[in-house]
Image (tube, rainbow, N blue to C red; front, side):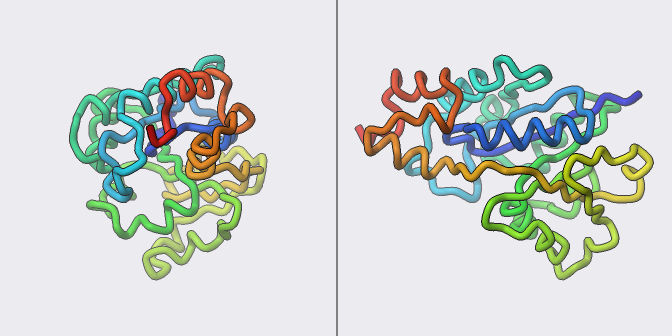
Length: 219
Protein backbone atom coordinates (compact mmCIF):
# COMPACT_ATOMS: atom_id res chain seq x y z
CA UNK A 1 0.00 0.00 0.00
CA UNK A 2 1.25 3.49 -0.80
CA UNK A 3 2.64 5.46 2.10
CA UNK A 4 0.23 8.16 3.28
CA UNK A 5 1.78 11.44 4.36
CA UNK A 6 0.02 14.42 5.88
CA UNK A 7 1.57 17.80 5.15
CA UNK A 8 0.68 20.39 7.79
CA UNK A 9 2.31 23.75 7.14
CA UNK A 10 2.04 27.00 8.98
CA UNK A 11 3.81 29.76 10.83
CA UNK A 12 3.41 27.87 14.14
CA UNK A 13 4.05 31.05 16.11
CA UNK A 14 3.80 29.11 18.38
CA UNK A 15 2.46 25.62 17.69
CA UNK A 16 -0.37 24.78 20.11
CA UNK A 17 -2.73 22.05 21.23
CA UNK A 18 -5.27 23.02 18.59
CA UNK A 19 -2.77 22.21 15.83
CA UNK A 20 -1.98 18.87 17.45
CA UNK A 21 -5.64 17.93 17.92
CA UNK A 22 -6.49 18.71 14.29
CA UNK A 23 -3.48 16.73 13.04
CA UNK A 24 -4.37 13.75 15.23
CA UNK A 25 -7.96 13.73 13.96
CA UNK A 26 -6.79 13.82 10.34
CA UNK A 27 -4.16 11.17 11.02
CA UNK A 28 -6.82 8.83 12.42
CA UNK A 29 -9.44 9.52 9.74
CA UNK A 30 -7.09 9.04 6.78
CA UNK A 31 -4.82 6.43 8.39
CA UNK A 32 -1.72 8.51 7.77
CA UNK A 33 1.66 6.88 8.25
CA UNK A 34 3.18 10.21 9.22
CA UNK A 35 2.24 13.85 9.61
CA UNK A 36 4.94 16.34 8.67
CA UNK A 37 4.67 19.68 10.47
CA UNK A 38 6.38 22.26 8.25
CA UNK A 39 7.13 25.64 9.87
CA UNK A 40 7.47 28.37 7.28
CA UNK A 41 10.70 30.32 6.89
CA UNK A 42 9.18 33.58 5.63
CA UNK A 43 5.39 33.40 5.70
CA UNK A 44 4.09 35.14 2.54
CA UNK A 45 0.70 36.13 3.97
CA UNK A 46 1.75 37.38 7.41
CA UNK A 47 3.59 40.39 8.73
CA UNK A 48 7.03 39.47 10.09
CA UNK A 49 6.69 41.65 13.19
CA UNK A 50 6.03 39.49 16.24
CA UNK A 51 7.07 36.27 14.48
CA UNK A 52 9.67 34.24 16.38
CA UNK A 53 12.75 33.18 14.45
CA UNK A 54 12.49 30.20 12.14
CA UNK A 55 14.90 28.32 14.39
CA UNK A 56 12.77 28.95 17.49
CA UNK A 57 9.53 28.00 15.76
CA UNK A 58 11.06 24.83 14.34
CA UNK A 59 12.39 23.79 17.75
CA UNK A 60 8.97 24.31 19.34
CA UNK A 61 7.43 22.11 16.65
CA UNK A 62 10.04 19.43 17.35
CA UNK A 63 9.20 19.54 21.05
CA UNK A 64 5.45 19.44 20.37
CA UNK A 65 5.80 16.32 18.21
CA UNK A 66 7.49 14.30 20.96
CA UNK A 67 5.21 11.57 22.25
CA UNK A 68 2.93 11.62 19.21
CA UNK A 69 3.64 8.55 17.02
CA UNK A 70 3.91 9.52 13.38
CA UNK A 71 4.28 13.25 14.05
CA UNK A 72 7.49 14.74 12.65
CA UNK A 73 8.94 18.23 12.38
CA UNK A 74 10.16 19.01 8.86
CA UNK A 75 12.82 21.66 8.29
CA UNK A 76 12.29 21.70 4.54
CA UNK A 77 11.07 25.32 4.42
CA UNK A 78 13.39 26.59 7.15
CA UNK A 79 16.44 25.14 5.38
CA UNK A 80 15.34 26.55 2.01
CA UNK A 81 15.73 30.04 3.51
CA UNK A 82 13.28 31.62 1.09
CA UNK A 83 9.68 32.76 1.03
CA UNK A 84 7.49 29.76 1.78
CA UNK A 85 5.11 28.81 -1.02
CA UNK A 86 3.06 25.63 -0.89
CA UNK A 87 3.75 24.63 -4.50
CA UNK A 88 7.52 24.61 -3.84
CA UNK A 89 7.21 22.73 -0.56
CA UNK A 90 4.87 20.16 -2.08
CA UNK A 91 7.28 19.52 -4.94
CA UNK A 92 10.16 18.97 -2.51
CA UNK A 93 8.10 16.67 -0.27
CA UNK A 94 7.06 14.55 -3.24
CA UNK A 95 10.71 14.33 -4.25
CA UNK A 96 11.65 13.06 -0.80
CA UNK A 97 8.79 10.55 -0.66
CA UNK A 98 8.29 9.30 -4.23
CA UNK A 99 5.09 7.34 -4.70
CA UNK A 100 3.55 8.53 -1.45
CA UNK A 101 -0.02 9.77 -1.29
CA UNK A 102 0.16 13.32 0.08
CA UNK A 103 -2.66 14.92 2.06
CA UNK A 104 -2.41 18.69 2.51
CA UNK A 105 -3.93 19.53 5.92
CA UNK A 106 -5.32 22.97 6.67
CA UNK A 107 -8.17 24.69 8.45
CA UNK A 108 -11.17 26.05 6.59
CA UNK A 109 -10.05 29.62 7.35
CA UNK A 110 -6.82 29.05 5.43
CA UNK A 111 -8.56 27.17 2.62
CA UNK A 112 -10.85 30.15 2.01
CA UNK A 113 -7.75 32.08 0.89
CA UNK A 114 -6.42 29.44 -1.50
CA UNK A 115 -7.18 31.63 -4.51
CA UNK A 116 -4.35 33.93 -3.37
CA UNK A 117 -1.74 31.16 -3.34
CA UNK A 118 0.97 30.94 -5.97
CA UNK A 119 -0.05 28.41 -8.65
CA UNK A 120 -2.95 27.26 -6.49
CA UNK A 121 -4.52 25.28 -9.33
CA UNK A 122 -1.36 23.16 -9.58
CA UNK A 123 -1.36 22.65 -5.82
CA UNK A 124 -4.93 21.37 -5.99
CA UNK A 125 -3.96 18.92 -8.70
CA UNK A 126 -0.77 17.66 -7.06
CA UNK A 127 -2.22 16.35 -3.79
CA UNK A 128 -5.38 15.68 -1.80
CA UNK A 129 -6.65 18.39 0.54
CA UNK A 130 -8.13 17.75 3.97
CA UNK A 131 -9.96 20.83 5.22
CA UNK A 132 -10.80 20.80 8.92
CA UNK A 133 -13.37 22.82 10.80
CA UNK A 134 -12.35 25.83 12.88
CA UNK A 135 -14.32 27.62 15.60
CA UNK A 136 -16.10 30.62 14.10
CA UNK A 137 -15.98 29.30 10.53
CA UNK A 138 -18.56 27.36 8.56
CA UNK A 139 -16.89 24.27 7.10
CA UNK A 140 -19.42 24.22 4.27
CA UNK A 141 -18.16 27.63 3.13
CA UNK A 142 -15.19 25.81 1.60
CA UNK A 143 -17.53 24.54 -1.12
CA UNK A 144 -17.94 28.09 -2.45
CA UNK A 145 -14.24 28.74 -2.87
CA UNK A 146 -13.17 29.76 -6.38
CA UNK A 147 -16.76 30.54 -7.37
CA UNK A 148 -17.85 26.98 -6.73
CA UNK A 149 -15.55 25.47 -9.37
CA UNK A 150 -14.44 22.86 -6.83
CA UNK A 151 -17.95 21.67 -5.99
CA UNK A 152 -17.68 18.43 -7.93
CA UNK A 153 -14.35 17.57 -6.35
CA UNK A 154 -15.41 18.08 -2.72
CA UNK A 155 -16.25 15.17 -0.44
CA UNK A 156 -18.19 16.00 2.70
CA UNK A 157 -17.12 13.62 5.40
CA UNK A 158 -18.78 12.89 8.73
CA UNK A 159 -17.07 13.33 12.07
CA UNK A 160 -15.15 10.15 12.87
CA UNK A 161 -15.45 8.81 9.31
CA UNK A 162 -12.48 7.19 7.55
CA UNK A 163 -12.98 7.79 3.82
CA UNK A 164 -12.45 4.71 1.66
CA UNK A 165 -9.37 4.71 -0.58
CA UNK A 166 -11.60 4.44 -3.64
CA UNK A 167 -12.68 8.04 -3.02
CA UNK A 168 -9.17 9.40 -3.41
CA UNK A 169 -9.29 9.14 -7.20
CA UNK A 170 -12.74 10.76 -7.41
CA UNK A 171 -12.40 13.71 -5.05
CA UNK A 172 -9.62 16.22 -4.43
CA UNK A 173 -10.88 18.07 -1.36
CA UNK A 174 -12.18 16.34 1.77
CA UNK A 175 -14.12 18.35 4.36
CA UNK A 176 -13.53 16.85 7.81
CA UNK A 177 -15.64 17.99 10.76
CA UNK A 178 -13.62 17.78 13.97
CA UNK A 179 -13.98 18.87 17.58
CA UNK A 180 -11.57 21.75 17.02
CA UNK A 181 -10.08 23.48 20.04
CA UNK A 182 -10.72 27.22 20.21
CA UNK A 183 -7.07 28.22 20.50
CA UNK A 184 -5.08 30.73 18.48
CA UNK A 185 -1.40 31.59 18.36
CA UNK A 186 -2.35 35.28 18.52
CA UNK A 187 -4.09 34.75 21.86
CA UNK A 188 -1.14 32.77 23.20
CA UNK A 189 1.29 35.55 22.33
CA UNK A 190 -0.98 38.11 24.01
CA UNK A 191 -1.16 35.99 27.16
CA UNK A 192 2.62 35.65 27.28
CA UNK A 193 3.05 39.42 26.92
CA UNK A 194 0.73 39.81 29.92
CA UNK A 195 2.93 37.48 31.93
CA UNK A 196 0.55 34.50 31.85
CA UNK A 197 1.70 30.89 31.61
CA UNK A 198 0.44 29.37 28.32
CA UNK A 199 0.83 25.75 29.47
CA UNK A 200 -2.91 24.97 29.12
CA UNK A 201 -2.75 25.96 25.45
CA UNK A 202 0.61 24.48 24.38
CA UNK A 203 2.52 21.33 25.37
CA UNK A 204 4.56 21.79 28.58
CA UNK A 205 7.87 21.55 26.71
CA UNK A 206 6.76 24.36 24.39
CA UNK A 207 5.68 26.50 27.34
CA UNK A 208 9.10 25.94 28.93
CA UNK A 209 10.85 26.89 25.68
CA UNK A 210 8.84 30.11 25.37
CA UNK A 211 9.73 31.03 28.95
CA UNK A 212 13.39 30.03 28.77
CA UNK A 213 13.97 31.94 25.51
CA UNK A 214 11.79 34.91 26.51
CA UNK A 215 9.72 34.68 23.34
CA UNK A 216 6.77 37.04 22.75
CA UNK A 217 7.69 39.29 25.67
CA UNK A 218 8.44 42.46 23.65
CA UNK A 219 11.91 42.49 25.19
